[in-house]
Length: 190
Length: 190
DNA sequence: CGTCTATTTGAATGTACTCAAAAGCGGTGG
DNA sequence: CCACCGCTTTTGAGTACATTCAAATAGACG
Image (cartoon, protein in one colour):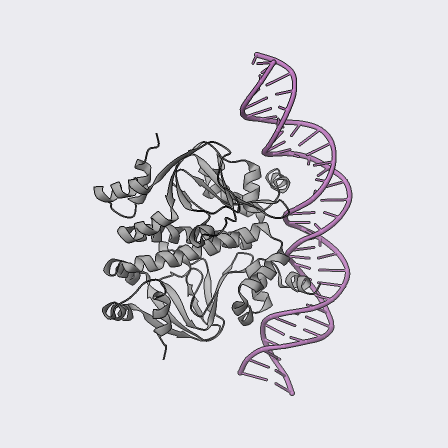
């Protein structure tokens, strides 16, 4: 069984829900369990959902036309993940999302989320805060990317997200930093 | 005089305001005119405001400890700009924001924005959409950054933001792409 | 018109990649 | 429980990408 209490407490960090609202939310959420290595979104598919991670960990990545694998983001327990661009524009996904371990997820469909905003407007607030934080994180990442060396970015990443680092390979860190695994290995061993 | 009508139509792309709401909004907004090269935010300062650009253009940039200048974002007419991380956490700014031309701006203070969310909750919706789009843009930028070559990113940038390109120097594009002006020059002339 | 900054060019250097091969490690099946 | 398989990590050589520094040229602005 997937425990939805973490999901509700994540939401109640920012807004307060009464029982009726919780029940409505329960009625539209979709519980999903996926196995390690399974894809919850494939590149080119329609991205219809945003996921909350109850347990496990995931990786969003893009394969370009030369076959290079680039990691856009990781998500662990208590994080939200989607291909934002495709979710809001309802376009084919630019990224795939794979489970790094067995995961318990809670998905919200694009159209039920739109309805949710209408029916219970305080969710506008919740997602306003969520996206504001996500935007801020990405702005910092852009800063990191153009302003620091690869070596510095590696140590900054490890220091900032130790819980993620535990769960992923060095190859995946390299793909997040935008360098080859060989080069990351060389950096570490000097 | 600064014309606030563009500001209101920007907001009314996503939500509808009645006269009382417009009046309230008018009462908290701060009109600001700045000259070319003026800084509206200095690195290390408290970032108290988010700005809407009525006219003109701006650049947010970071100077690291080696003196390297990295552009985080540009903003032109009808865009919003702030140092998001510092705005929401009320920490010293990581970036400076400078006017590239004479600008007419409308600023919203952090605390009056928080009050606005309480008084007129539909602004949660407006900023939810604004930040969702901003997040999506930054996610795409991260993808661009790790997945394409500098040359590709240059042409993608020029193609995606032609109105920005008109207003900025090549040196500033280089600083946005994260390369030296010399290297960008070499790319163009081959 | 003169000054200041941006852009270009080139040489030397450093950073990061490719390719290939070896070593390490974890999981699976016999 | 060990042996094998597949994948990750390491190592190294050769190459490509990008930087630094310096100097020349071109443009923009007062």
